[in-house]
Length: 292
Image (cartoon, rainbow, N blue to C red; front, side):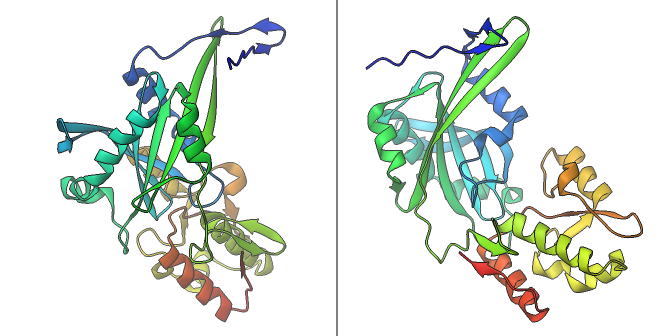
């Protein structure tokens, strides 16, 4: 079956504007890393760490090269394999060979992972289309040796000087109560990072005279470990400008303002380990969170 897709904007036709080379697709993803989000829970906060990583014996035919290495929250490292055309079982096999060399990646650069617990892994295939066989596997929750695999298709269109990109994600992660992936607080559901943001915001609203120093006492940095539960907005923005990676929520609607005008940003990097510490801590403060 052939699918015919026609898109219009303001009654003007939009034409296909495909990526001609993998490097062009890679460049687009480097500038728009949010495209690599896989769901609204564990795989929502994504940071691209590096690209074009050479691996010795990364493939059965010889050395290999990882297109993109990404980090999902403070819990997963993702190997991203790009294809200019269709992603299929052959591409899946290549990705799996790279996943076999995942320990080598950590040996190449210790800066890829600085959390207190070892990383979990996820594999991501990105192309302009997807085979029906691979699509069926991924939407049914395909895993390779316990590592979840996702597929993304990216199509680019052009209307004069305007560029439009459409992406579809094929991914199903079989969550269990051991994943600590979704929480309920004050009647709303959140993932790990968003839960922390909401709890700290609620605490500030209920303690209108709290200072930055007192808030640090209430939510000590040790709960998160590497970056702290929150930082000054200026610090969070400086980290983003210097590294290109969002370690904190810095969008206007995510910023928390104290009564004296101080603005803070909460950390996005949360794993099962440190979110459990956070929930145990706020429980002692009388703040109730339900694990869904």
